[in-house]
Length: 321
Image 1 (cartoon, rainbow, N blue to C red):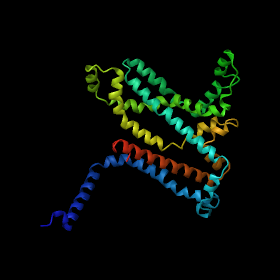
Image 2: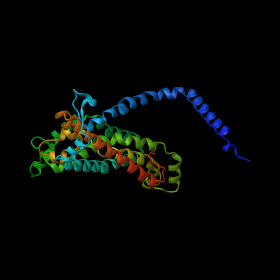
Image 3: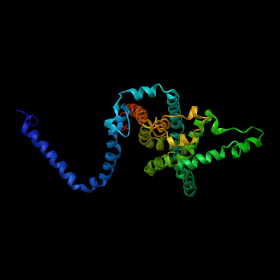
Image 4: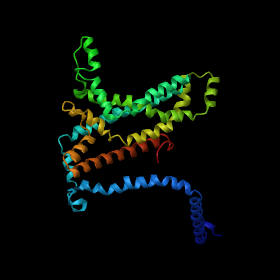
């Protein structure tokens, strides 16, 4: 006898029941779908609809003629970017700054969260968390202003200390080799407290029973951190690392642009600043869009690759998809 799965009528009836069940679940949970609707609309309007303008990268775009009225030039804008004198420098600067930023700024919030989690004095823990979190609310413009004041070769406190010790004043903001270090460590100071919050929240979800059992077995704080905290944090760390890989070529434009000057331009010129200069300063929208699209494709390749590697290493447990 044939099984029910082989009978077309039975298969169609099963699919019909599944559709009715899905419809019933949607009706029963209409409030949840209504809650998520603004987010869906936001992404459609501000993320997917603008993709229509990506074709500007393949046109000699003239605003007066519109997108369809502008001449189709194919890969010409990409060729212009690849032959641009600062193409190589901008790629190297962006990649170097991104990897250095990831290498230093990614583990620092994890370390901060682990240390705060082991702190038993409540008032001290809250004080440190507040102090480390507060710089996040400083705007980038104010932050760069603070950097310029403290690092000024004329009136900066740092150079005043150097002079008092018998040294010569250093123009920190004008030294190309110091640009990336100033950028990264100022970013560490500003964002570590904020980035640590999600790790602290993950650690707060660990059952106290694990710590109690470890203490009974004589485990020190370091071993509790090593064998309890870190394994529980790994899924969160992997997800945030994958998401960070998707922004590897998207360094913050505002901070780099504000810190940039004629002396450090060789090391501070990144892809984001080129997009601004091509698009807004020179009104070359086709070239600007081509550079931005190139940047997006590289980021997509990075996030897919890192997600694949993470999935392989964790047997698919900690990958995004």
